[in-house]
Length: 560
Image (tube, rainbow, N blue to C red; front, side, top):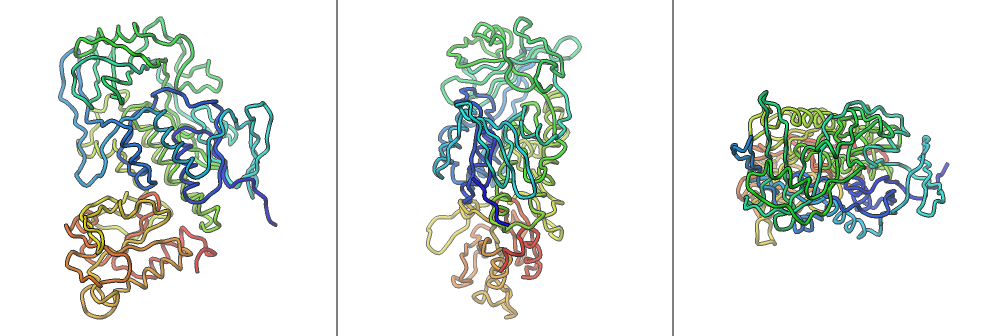
């Protein structure tokens, strides 16, 4: 029986997470609508930290240049305790990581994603609220309340809830949201100061009492503009909402985000600066200020049938390390490419279940880590500094053990489920400049099969010249047949490979960076998923195991 759908996917919530989901769906040709109950974008610099992994995502999507033009670098953090300067933290990553840390006000992130989405003919339906929904085996029926107050019924294949800490979608699914709240309340403010501290460094100044406990705190994150920072600090008694940890006054018992009541004013901010600023300074040009509450909660599952939750609808936690929004963006990206295959009818029946299997453990780890850091400080983390930096950058997120990660790819170098690292020094026959691997992946919508080897014999030697056939063409054909033409193939050759090594798109590893970072010492096939993670590492590569791996992602009907 044929079913009629008004659109393929409804996305509830137009923050950075919902916009990422909608943009990726539209980029992949999936029809969707995105609704948000707010009449306009909020002008608040709430989430401001942009992690290197998010910039890699935006690179793959094709919008990173716009973000880089709007953001400011985050070079590190200056630390002060009771007025004494502590060792400075510099945010340094390995040279092969293509992007550093950045800061960008949330409303700018939303603007960039919104404008990108508009290129695909889809805009945010403002003032439109998801009221309720019901799902069955074939789709989801949602009720929307429009700006006029009228209600509309919408039939879609899928519903994605990116509607924040008080999510209607989460409540409608009956998901648990276990956790708790911090008793402290914070002031947030977007202001300018006239100190002479180094550009691009955050500031963390605290006061410890005689027992060693922190009783006063100032955290400043640089923003675009001269001397401009997003500041957070403890709330003075006169501004406190006086709510307890579980926030009985919250409509759903979840206290997280901006509070009502009297907003902090410039004198409130100046009083904290007078106590804790490492330099005498005057605050001015306040753009907005609010009181902020922090909870830590996690849903029991990220999906139920044809309905999914992402971002704050699934996990909320302290803003320590700027993990929340970035984690939500990765939720959305992980889900979008899988939904796109499902809408096409090209997804394996179990593919969508891998969203919860992959992303919920990540949410659990992030909630636990940020709670520890908020309570004890990041300096109490037992990880070595290099590992700590990579983890904060979200470059160590891994899906090893995922139902769609090939379990046979153990060994040195990145394993199935790991992020596919970038590398430089790839040269082609036409471009006269070296490229990075991410340059080759940019704007590609689907999986990419990377074949590494010597390539002797125009695709008919084994890479060592013994004439038994390295099967580059056969591997590419196996990928096409197993995916219905949805896997593109590129070849990475050793630097001394002959010019006619293969008729497939090929690039030489002129500096040996690919071989080093991927620990590739002999012909190897790497399957890179649309979200930039390795699905398989096959050494030696062969069509049969490649097809078997792809069969866990693609439906039999997609294969040809």
